[in-house]
Image 1 (spheres, helix red, strand yellow):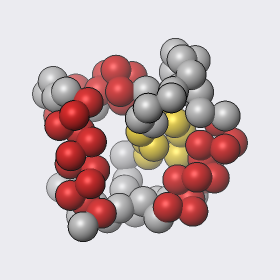
Image 2 (cartoon, one colour; image 1 turned 90 degrees about the horizontal axis):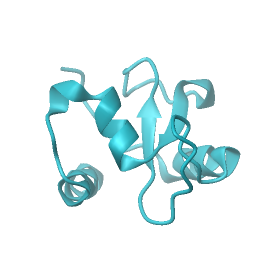
Image 3 (cartoon, helix red, strand yellow; image 1 turned 180 degrees about the vertical axis):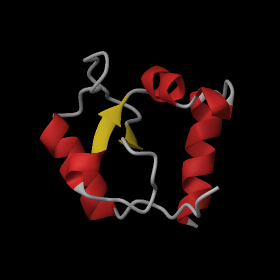
Amino acid sequence: MKPRLALPFPIRKQVQRRDHDYCFDCGRFQTYKIYIHHIDKNPQNNQLENLISLCGPCHRARHPEAGRKSDIELSLEDMELRA
């Protein structure tokens, strides 16, 4: 598995602004948690063209290998990655 580093905050905000806080897959507006997804699944490729905003259900659908995790578990993992 590739090493995973936290996505730099300025890049995260650029993607969210570009996508207007809407999920790329289902179009749902996100008020709570937006996942930034690497299209090519390479966590080191942080080019804007490789990043999209996804809601929790759509992000889980794109990562079936991760199993079913709740949004809370995913949020906790995200916080741990930033620590």
